[in-house]
Length: 348
Image (cartoon, rainbow, N blue to C red; front, side, top):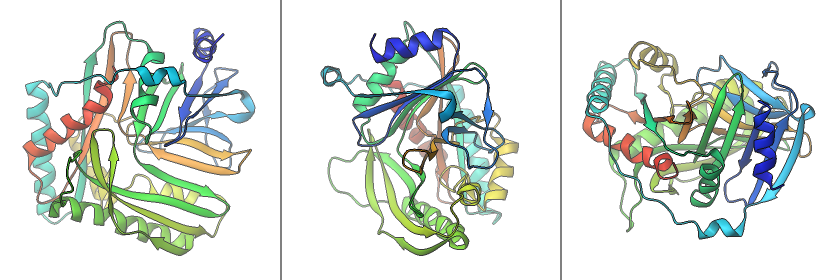
């Protein structure tokens, strides 16, 4: 029985599982939970794979001690897959609604209440003859620099994604994180970023630096550079420091949600999103990954971006967003979400 047959046999029993691969790694890991309990992270001292909602009101995990563990290499045969195309199609009503949301965010920012708001939208996509294993294998091959995962729990449903953004990595009291912001289609030549994107990314970097300060020592920050994720590019800064406390709970709660997925000041941006965004993000822009892995004592968490929720065998929901500042243009921001949606549409 191959690995995906084993996972599908497990899923047929309506039991939880997660299968995932880290950026630039050919190794795929899977945890098959042996009961259908929905376990909640309470102290962040637990060990397992965590799935947290955007608002942190739901932080669930698949416990290591309750799971069977599988490991395999990405098949070389998959490299013969042809990368599919995806159109930038959209519904006109989605465009109108999102541009109105962005205009409201710009007005709030220009009033002086905040500096940045990250708006998002949910797009339901029809699928035909869809198979999660085929989609996941495409994800493995076409997005090697992303954190690729598929999470299933009968009490939650199925979520999949290929995230370009690490929330944090903790190993031997050292923490690594990134400030990621600004978005454009992959450039064929080396071109400079616009002022809007540079300012947006600097806001994220400064927030992370201030937030980490009470928890760490020896903080180091790289120069901003261009990072490519599939067909999209971002401005990225690498941040490292030494933790003063072994338990990552405080720093996780302080960091998430970052300005890259929420805005700043955080409280003002959250209030705006609750009032105006018009839907529940659920696990979109939450965080996912390994928590206190027993073998290595590492925590390795990623922001749940470029993701989708499986609604049925015929429909999936895509979640996409973009950072809004005073200089944003509503139509250009909607186009950015269309470009980002291609990441998931290409593998459906």
